Amino acid sequence: MEDLVKKAQQGDKDAFTKLIILLKSDLYKIAKTRIKNDDDIYDVIQETMIIAFKSIKKLKKVESFKPWIIKILINTSNNLYKKSNKNNIISLDKIGDYSSLNHSEFDKVETLIDFNFILKNFKYEDRIIIILYYVEKFTDKEIGEILKIKENTVKTKRTRIKEKIKEILEKGGQELWIN
Image (cartoon, rainbow, N blue to C red; front, side, top):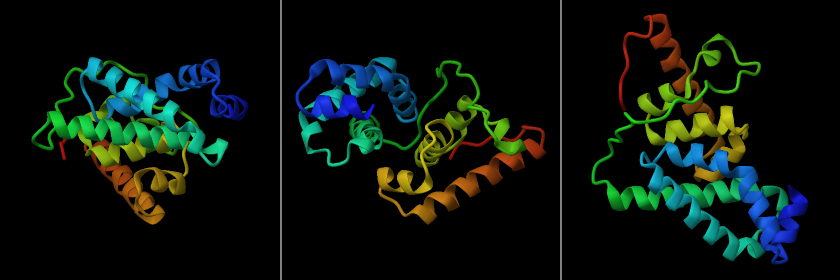
């Protein structure tokens, strides 16, 4: 990926296109945590691509391309969300089915986390933290940099979310909430 980033920084449009193709499903999942309408999601991704292409030469570390473009996507998604929503409640009834999150070496609670469950039952920032950590495999430090919050705050929020999930599972999954 780093070679493609270097080529894209030199103006190679094909290299930039390849980068976007490599990241398209990741960008979609992340945008989906904030925006419910597929047309709006694709608009946000397109706007993200335009912004990233215009400013890729300013990227200092080629290995930081993915966090950098995700940060642009999050900011673009937030801007659209603020324009189109007057309250903080997101209706996520029409979310498509996703397979459960990657099953690596998570503990028992984490192996049961379903992407739809995350989207439907947690606040936006919590959803982003979980998706970036478990799906995209970013570290707490990287997530903090992307979201402009402290690393310890990311760890604390992730632990709190995990405890909420554990609580629900212990009650048989009967108690769901929307924050």
